[in-house]
Image 1 (cartoon, rainbow, N blue to C red):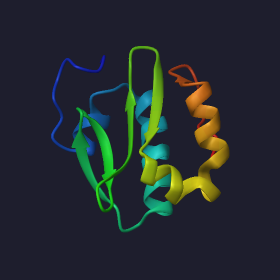
Image 2: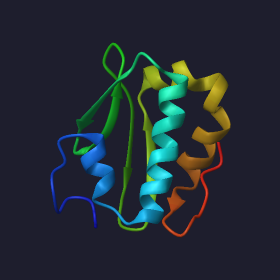
Image 3: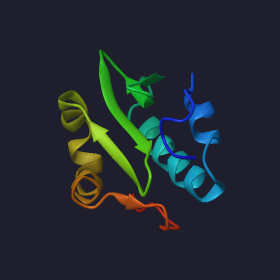
Length: 104
């Protein structure tokens, strides 16, 4: 499934729209966010998964040929210690769909 062909109402619905290999990566990313920000609430914003904590914290999504992670300014600050290397990696090198693992 390519982003934009169906509108998901929840993160579960969003992830379910993709093949198993992409679902696995999205779930790993989701779990890492939950562990780092347990008080954050899940939502769909801009048609992609979003975690909110006093506003939007981070977004992530699957696209035609990659998976991307979008921290907001507050998300960058909140996760800078735990996820700095991951932010750097993903912002410069989006995760291709062919990746079998998500390194966190």
